[in-house]
Length: 199
Length: 199
Image 1 (cartoon, each protein chain N blue to C red):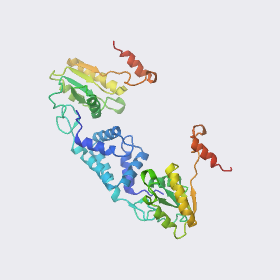
Image 2: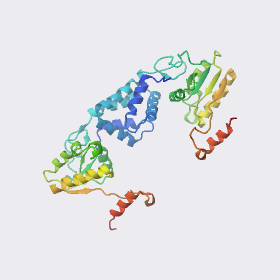
Image 3: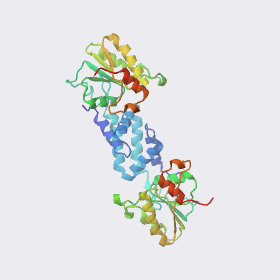
Image 4: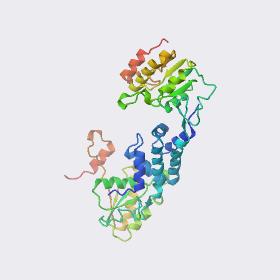
């Protein structure tokens, strides 16, 4: 007999719809919130309700932002002749965390994937080429993921942008720092070899 | 520069407070909800807000329920002479899913753990002994987890209940069905040997 209260089932279902959260984790989270009390659940509910009200898309770089243009696009100290193209907002954060990049960004919100019927028109590609129109940008660094789809997107952008007389580069593929050559997969090792540089 | 909007940070923090959800998963969930739109986030928020309003504790078995007494305790077809004692509401669900148990339950809401200062008084133990007072119960099956704390709780309950002239049993420990003897850990194998039965 399923004696689970409706309210419990609803929350389990809602958690279960999130990516990477299966029915077991969804149950555990729900019963955790039941145990710790109403306040914890209310905190999460409020944060969820305020998520979309508190965010806009930056009309320049298409990143998710509190203001338009976003703090990076409106920062006068950033180098305005370089645009780093990434797939997702989280990628901007990852690159910012390196502390090594001072240029601007462009967020595609996805990658080209014919299987999922996602072509350039479904991404923020038109917004990117519009930014190159005034010839102020010298280099576009394509930092899409090192996956089939990320590579396809990079190749597409390369062909699209090169005629505009802007240099297009791709972030390096190779062994991750702290990795072990012995345990590297064949493809990564081949790419590390192919991308070798003089020391 | 951390360009993350406040609303995004708040939701990441709220997800991150849930057990088993680290900062990376919290970010992924948040940006997923940003991408799929407001409706998905609102569904989860509503389910969270309704969680505590839609649930009560059953005054008999202490399980989380929609009504008091819960559907199992108020079901006239359940065998009322057997009580299965479990640690958490999810354990009731697991046993119900076997389809092999027709008795009643009692949910302790935890286990004895001196390290965490959880003794019998922090659990629903008094409620359990109260149910045994009218001598209608013949057997108490202790189905706490096969852990140190679950075992300690089982031993404590055994000593507490046996003087009340109620049989106390513990669910069997042994090899899991579909498991492989070769890969079983020593303790499980030792318990499977000790618990051997004639075929």
